[in-house]
Image 1 (tube, helix red, strand yellow):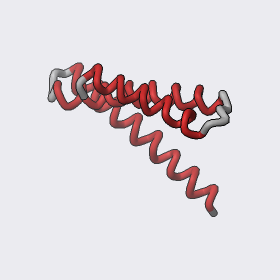
Image 2: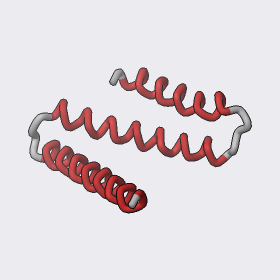
Image 3: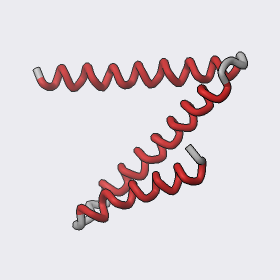
Length: 85
């Protein structure tokens, strides 16, 4: 039962993410709502970078839990400050 719920939630996230990104790209191509859709795509890129960093850090198997979770956090904060999101 829990596995089905987990699979359903993952599928929902995948479909929702795909639909949101596709909608933003199409609206940007047709010139509608540039600020909103660009912001969504920028957030998607930052989240992808964060996911990659978090995956790399978790694979290293750091002994310190503090270091393991502080590294992605600092990286994302620096990215967000650099893009003024």
